[in-house]
Length: 381
Image 1 (cartoon, rainbow, N blue to C red):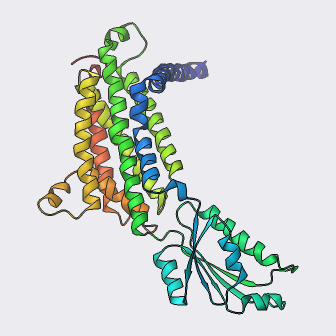
Image 2 (cartoon, rainbow, N blue to C red; image 1 turned 90 degrees about the vertical axis):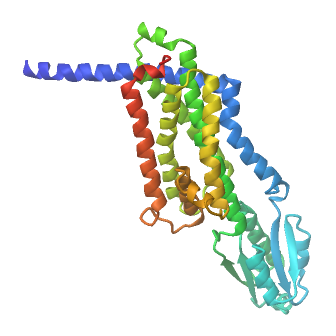
Image 3 (cartoon, one colour; image 1 turned 120 degrees about the vertical axis):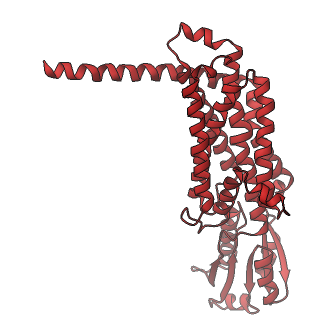
């Protein structure tokens, strides 16, 4: 008898949790359907993707992305060079000295090959001469570099030997040397990633909340099993799924993240509660989706643009000091450090601690607002 009395409250508790879960999931499904069918929401969600692709198209030169640059120092007119010239996927940069070869590899950021003067004669004699090759794949060119390796070996094997008639020394240069171009790419990636959270994600969730007010959701909830907390949680989950999908698409199109990417992902994870907090605060204050779109867009621009410029430019006083008080600069600087420095750690990153504090304050304010006035989520206050 005692066992039955003790298990009854547990069953009731599980039943209530299941009930809350069903109510929240119903709101999530409704909002996801609206996000994926409403033209305004679709454009808002995919705007960062469009900007990212536009940059790739206009700056990165997609049409030439499959061409591999090779620096070549050939001191003996080798037939290997002639074979490479006929390969349309290779762009050869012929140099006349070892010094020039090293300069091209280091400054031009390309792979390189040094062919000895007697290379062809040594191969024909059955010897195994040395062939020095440097592998320096640019961003997104690893498959082309591997194809070039196979091409070199195939051309040498055409001499009919059973074993490779050359002692090839492959020197793979450090893959993640961060150059000015890489830094610019990571900077623009940071701009797009922060846009996903603050200029689209926060706006999307806040507009979903504001729309419920316009549709008199408070009246509907009187006769429904849902309450304001269900509404806030459901819309937060729907917005989180949308933000995660867009982030994943951008990172996939970027070919992954550089540097200390786990730390970069941790920064993005901390940014999600900040976004949800801003969205809940805004949605609880504004009365219409039009107000939400106008005021939140202006606010996010004022919060993000100074942080972007403070990372890219050295600002004069008093602007540099003023921009230091903008919270988003901790996120931008932290992401920049993580994406451009493999050795970046939480312990040596004051930006991480500062951004963690910002997250706690913003999310705490949103929860306090929801606790003090839960009806502000569903009705005009």
